[in-house]
Image (tube, rainbow, N blue to C red; front, top):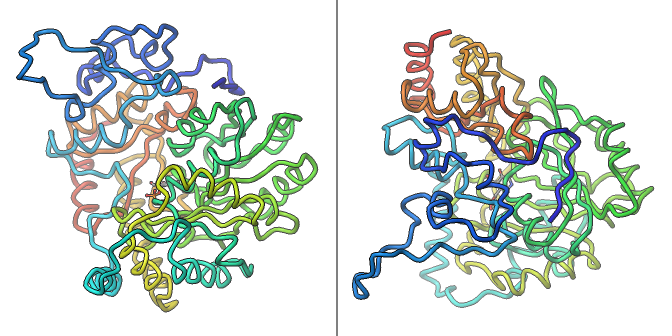
Length: 453
Ligand SMILES: Cc1ncc(COP(=O)(O)O)c(C=O)c1O
């Protein structure tokens, strides 16, 4: 994989302060670790890429004292344990309140859980059809019509996947050839870079900058070349909470149509659109035939562990997605698919209430963070909010998160972890508000008491 960034810095994920390197078990030579040039990394350096709970245990029957070096294929060498795993295990270790990883600390609705239990009792427990049980494909198509106004064929244009993560992987692996250029907007959800890397894509990165994280249209236009195969969009956008505006999407659509470029659109937070209407890029004129729309159950139904997702695309693109899906997972959990069909048929009041609850949580966290002294950027959608941590004087986002966990007892995620160039995220950290009110208030209280400018 080659990476082109519109910046002058060498590509690297983030440069932790030296104490944080030790703290999270990273080598001090983090830069070489994340962009290694030699395939023969020392066992120590390789081991440092894995969290201790993923390290292989010693084989006592052979009683050997030398550990075998960890191995990984070249295309994945630069990736390490994800920041979310690291931060969540640190939260446990330090008793910190976890406003880092985006999973709710409250449960999903009973009617969906009951539907799963019923499906298991009814014996719906064997392999499902590869592209989804017919009832779920239908429920996804019905929901999509309500949301986007588009009528899609549940049999030919909907593929059920293992969460949106697999929809992303099946789309990229099924439609991208080695050497194809794919444009991503940084900061971006971390699986994009890793999966594009597995597909051998050339990543071109366009940075969205605060306060509005607006798309720099002229920069995007000049990034599109005859080799550009696809643009990845995520709206509402993790980590920034930005929502792509109609003007931005119209410009992207014109560019894609003129240059015969595909759009891969990740819309897992579509039901958490607070301040403006969510627009699916595929609903714009001329876009359905060139767009794969990806979504999942997890965020909307607070059931992130169920991992039921889907990809919607015209038959000629669905072909590629299904070819990859067939050999990634082939089929996904049968009873959970039955329950997901039930979930997607929830009355509109469910979605209204979900949004209202999340807007209340957003208000608690945003007001709290402002009262602590952060510069808070608008979160128009998702369950994340990004702040500028620089009023507190730490050298970068990683150093700030280190301080926040150790000295304050709160976990946030450094935004540089979502960027090809860590400079782009070094002033920013992300908090999540997918937690109950008490947890959000307790985190704010800790920060108010302990964070000093
Ligand atoms: C932007 C984005 N896309 C995809 C996913 C993964 O979704 P799933 O859990 O359905 O695989 C996430 C999860 O955090 C996300 O934030």
